[in-house]
Length: 330
Figure (tube, one colour):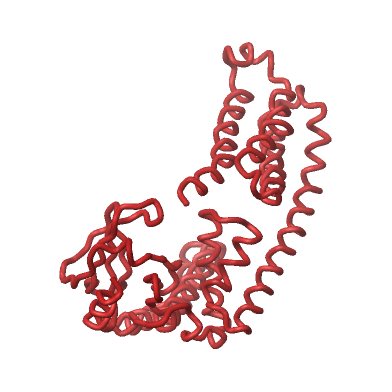
């Protein structure tokens, strides 16, 4: 998994590096550009039409659609960058590219809207057919966009709006697994989220009015928009922590917590499961699934590439039942 993600990120990293280099090249005078005398556009044209497509191809050749999409996007970014950094007296072909980029952007937006609508339709269809709600989101995304950090974030975002807009379509019994455990009652986690929801609703109009008159209407609108999104996140967390279970199947432990992406752990990866009463700080190799108080279950894992952490701490409603049931599976 790590190698796949890293390989998919190489084109973006390369784009950032050459963007910084060409920005310095075209906006400065040094021995690279013959002290300002050699800032011809064709230097950057080579990267736009040759280097970037080749890098995308060699890193993403297993997914031709991703190769084409990322090549077009990164080429468009470099064309936009060139319109700002290349001196006017050195622009010739670039003047035509600057006009073309708007056509590319419009076509790309149309294409992306089509893909997004296809993903949304696939998710709704999967919900109606009683599919695991997490798979209903992840499978269409990975089919259209591949596996990457971006699709992991998109899963959380789509899960958020699913719980906000149509929570009744998400049935907890449809999640994969044979035995379910929940986390919403542990130290009043769901009540804690509910309190923050009411507090946000109460303070939002007053904060907007104060910022409108003391700061500026624009600032008030921006802060209010951010607050509304935060409210949506809290509502989704409130609903998800009750419906999304931690489950045990015949061969795996599936850890789901609120809106986080599920973690699949084979039983043979687990060394030990035990109770926990200690405060757990954030650190490397540790994953925490807990909102309020101290997580009450600790799971030790074998080091492996499949799971990039060795300790998991979870706050569950019934730790004794969870620990005893998981030990029976090991």
